[in-house]
Structures are given as C-alpha cells and as structure tokens.
Amino acid sequence: MSARHFLSLMDCTPQELSGLIRRAIELKDLRRRGVLFEPLKNRVLGMIFEKASTRTRLSFEAGMIQLGGQAIFLSPRDTQLGRGEPIGDSAIVMSSMLDAVMIRTYAHSTLTEFAAHSRVPVINGLSDDLHPCQLLADMQTFIEQRGSIQGKTVAWIGDGNNMCNTYIEAALQFDFQLRVACPEGYEPNAELLKAAGERVQIVRDPLAAVAGAHLVSTDVWTSMGQEEEAAERLKLFAPYQVTRTLLDAADPAVIFLHCLPAHRGEEISMDLLDDPRAQAWEQAENRLHAQKALLEFLVEPAYHHA
Image (tube, rainbow, N blue to C red):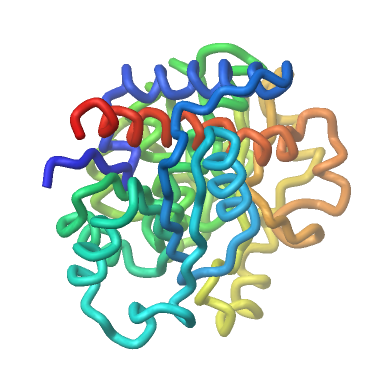
C-alpha cells in the first residue's frame, strides 16, 4: 500500500506544506478569475462522515467538482460501516473503487486503520485528535494577509482540543512560537507537547498568551461528543472568552481566526467576528482552496503511475 495519506500535518515535509499553501493561493486566484482548471477529471472522492459537517463537506465536494472530479457522500447510517463491517474490509473495497477517501470521524484510530488497508490516499477531514485540513486554511489565511508566519507568535485560547493539537504540529512545521491558554485539566495532547519542547508554552492567563501575538485563534468550548459537559465547561472557560479588548493586547497587526461554527457570547464576544482583525470568513473560504491544492497533490500523481 504505497498511497500517500494526509492524516496529520506531520505527513508532509515543511517544504511540501509551503508548496500546498502557495498552490492554494494560485488556485484561489484561478477561481476568482473564472479560469476552468480540471486536473482531476473522472476522479472520484469518497467522503465518510461520522460527525456532522458544513465546511468540510462543502469544501471537499465543491472542490472535487471544480477540479473536474466528483465526490460521493457516505454516512454510517447508509453504509455497512455503521453496521459493524470491519474498517479494514471497508477500506479494501472502497479504495478499489475510489481515487481518494476523506474521513471525518471520532477516533483517530479509525483513520490510521483505514489508511493501513487503503490503496488510495486517505485524508483526515477531522478526528478527535487532529484537524489538519483546517490548519492548511488557517496558514493560508495568515500568509495571504501578513506574509510568512515563520518566527511569529501565535496564541491559542480555550480548550486543548483537536484544533489546539494541530496548532502544535503547525508550530513545528511552519516554525512559529505557540502559547496555549487553557484551564487546568484541558491541556492539549501530552505527547505532542513533549515533542514540541520549547516551541509551545502553556499559560493559564489569556492576557499573557496574547501579549504581542501576531495570530490569535480559538474554538468552541464544547466539541462534538462532549455535550454533557457543556454547563461545567461554560463556567470553567468563561475567563477565556476572546474579546476586542483581549485582542488589543496582541500585536497591532494581529489577525483573529476561528474555524467555525462560532458560539457568540461564549468563546468569542458577540461582536468579535465583525472586528476588522477577524478573518474567519476568508479562513472558511480558504478551506476550499487549500483542500483543492491537497487533492491535486495527493490524487493527480496516481494518474501517471496507474
């Protein structure tokens, strides 16, 4: 099984990641200019969704269509996966009919297991551990607006969740400093923290985290699957709301990102997305362009070696 997968930012070299971002910016320009570009004609992406999705589904589906291919939406409700067919078996069969598979799931092991038995590229559309496609869009947004992120300071405020974990990987791959402000007991993955060493700092005070930061990001306080903890989390995370005043402590050229959906009045103040420093809408659109660059990178080579 020699297919190239994208389950984590660590599956690419820093050079490949920079290339993907550059390509995403080019593809965005082509789309803006209405240029038809269809390198993935007759290619089919299978999309397996165990978790609900707006941006991931739209961006992959629209992206495949724009690249000349097609995407098939599969939910566990409608396939044998939801009835207990072993993941490895599903992977063997699906990958014999598809050119790539995108999976949005709970357990990260679902992805690694599927990838181990797949003869085509497998893309992580989100797992409980990581959300690498989102980070491609985030990095694209920063680079478009502010240039290189190398050596800059990024602040993550809130839950040490899959997004926070992926920011740690991004700090390593894109070479920036990361400060994570989270309540005790809600830290990101310990192994990732250890691997990141000096590059990532855990602080309790959001103000200390954003001081001089060039990029500030957050996410919902309660992720999918944690709904029963919502009330407790609301209390605990209240001091971690990102507000305009908090952003004032950052670098004057700071940009604010949020992977959406946002809960206004919880992790962000009601008016934050209207602040000119907030780039969440551009960031959301960039999911489309970054993933098109990724699909082109992973799927097209197969064409020549088939």
